[in-house]
Image (cartoon, rainbow, N blue to C red; front, side, top):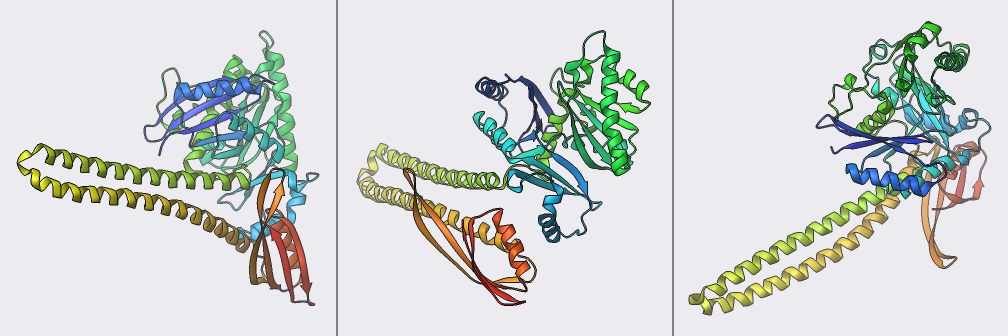
Length: 472
C-alpha cells in the first residue's frame, strides 16, 4: 500500500499528516488558511502538496464546524437489511427539525451491537468538497468531526479496560470532546473554546473557563445517558498553554493524561516530530484510510462518480500498456531488420525476409488498431453494464419483505436542457405486494436516489399489483 494522507480541517488551519504503513514513517505540515480568501488558501494547499510530494490517491478528511450528530443508538434489529428498514422508518425522529433531503448520513456498527450514526448538512459537505476540488484533491472518505481520535487511542489501556473516558482535542478556536464507553465511541461534542483564547498571566481564568465548558457537557451526558466521566486524555494544541494539564487536573479532580499518540503505534517520525499532539486528529484520519471502513459522509453520488473515474483510469492504463507492447514489438522488429542489412553476404535472403517482416509489422499495427477499437467498445459496454448492475443491485437490495417484481422495462428520450441535449432514461417497474404499505415503503426508498417517481397504477385489496415509473 502507498502512503495515506490525513487532513484535519478547521476554520484557521489544515493539519496535514502523511503515513507510510510499510516504512512506519510519518511526515506532517500545518497550512494557515486565509479566512474569506478561498483562492489564497487553495494556493497554499497546492504548494504544500507539491513541496512534500504528497499522495493524492488516498486522502481522508474530516468535516468540522457543521451540524453533526454522532451518537450511539441501540436499534431493535441487528441484521443489516432490517436495520436499514428501521433507519428509514425512524429517520425523522433521529434528526428532528431537519429536512431529510438536506442531510447526508453514515453509520458504523460495533461488536456490542450499537450503531454509531453521524449526520451532516448536505450544503456543508458540498462546500467542503468544492474547496478540496479547487485544491485538486478528491478525498476517499470524509469522517465526522473528531471520531478519528478513536483510531489513535485504540491501544490505550483505558480503551482495552473498557473504561468510560473522554478524549479532549484542543484546537485554536474550537475543540472537540469524544466520549468513549465500553471501549467504543459514544459521541462527539464540538466546543466553541480553544487555546486561541489564552493570554499570558491569565492561566487561571483560562482553566476556569475550560472547566465550565467541560462540566456542562459531562453533566448533560450524566443526566441523559448515565455516563460518569472521571478520566480524560488531552491532546491537540494544549502545549500552547503551559501548565494546563496540572491546573486542570487539580481543579477538576480528574485523572488527566497526555500520552504520546505516536508511541502507542510504535512508529518512527520525521526529524523534529517526537511528540507533537497537534497532529493527533490528522494522524487518526490517516489511520482510518488503512481499512477504508466506518463513517463516510461523502454523498452517494460522489462515491459512485469516484468509482467510475477509477474504472476509466484502469481502462486507460490497460490501453497504454497495449501501445507500449506494440512499440516494443516494433522496436525489436526494426533491430532485426538492421541486423540483416549489415550482413551483406545474406543480402539476397534479406530481401525475402524483409518483405515478410514488413508484412508482419503491418499486421501488428492493424491488430493494435483493432485492439484499441475493441478496448473503446469494451469500455463503453462495461460502463453501461456497471450502470445497470448498480441500478438493479440497489433496486433489489432495498426490496421490502412481501414485495416482488413481475416485469422491468426501460425506455429513453432526448431532452433539451439549455444548449445541451440530455438523454433521460425511464424505468417501468411492475410487481406484486402483500399490501399497500409495502409499496409505499418501497417508494420512500426509491425517492432517495431517483427522480420523477410516479405510481401509474395500484390495484387490489390486501395483496395488490402495482406499476411504478421512475427516472434514472
